Length: 380
Ligand SMILES: *Cc1c(COP(=O)(O)O)cnc(C)c1O
Image (cartoon, rainbow, N blue to C red; front, side, top):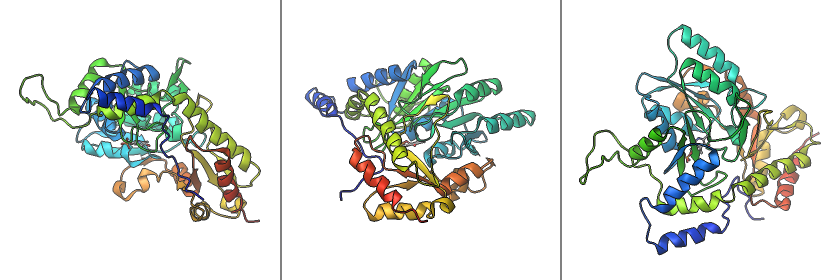
């Protein structure tokens, strides 16, 4: 049987036409009309004032922290259950990450822990400079709670929406807004396994037009407007190439279909596995609609008779890729010794959670194949 990947790229066909056009006009690198158009289309899609197309989501997080004024000696709070890139960007700035656990009802950042933690920090006069909220596996955080909290304490909110393009959530005013519109800055990723891909890429989004312009400058080696190369501040080489922006435009045009397909995967897994004792599913938060980037289940080894790792190995033996959930940052050797608020929820999800193949091109036969293999692992 051919290999089933966790989340492979899914091209629509339009990408190649747009690439041909870029080749025909010889806009190969570095910037160009597809970058400008991709930025406009991303901003429109996410309902924000502007977007800077970048070489990766990680670059976006780094620039967002710089724009927030984060530097050595500062604290930045960050979702504990996430990919390391969210936290690594804090270290790039010489700042200290503090990790905050998930809410068991949504698996995303627990707003009650944030509220209690910020109240405490305010009393001790040691508030974090920024909060990085991770829209986990395509589900946004509870921004109706988190945006007002950050505003109250003067903490810059940076939403890491790398996994959540196409998701929506209600804000404190009851308005439904797209992932990528929350916080002062939001970050997207177009890495190879995300819901849309440019093979590699990312974006920084904000309503603050001057901040987006500054992000573009910092991402272009911070070159000053002069005929020669003039530099006043430290810059980076973080811009997206015109070729990859062409691919991104082709991908963005089919985002709605991709969300439908990913949500269908999840619903079908749920149907196929619902009767199995000990199998749970990532809950959908009542405040929004996830893009279901990855279909995630939990395995209670006592009720199911087999643990998560045994299932993962059984799938691998049949050429099916699956993966444990993110290992919480407070358990990573890199972040040993960092402060963590809570931590038990993420630990439990890491111990028992499994991400199933979730590509938007999966067929019903693929989904049945995976579900059948999971089912066969049950032990009475
Ligand atoms: C993928 C991902 C990133 C990093 O994006 P890159 O484009 O790979 O740099 C950051 N945060 C989260 C939560 C991610 O899933």
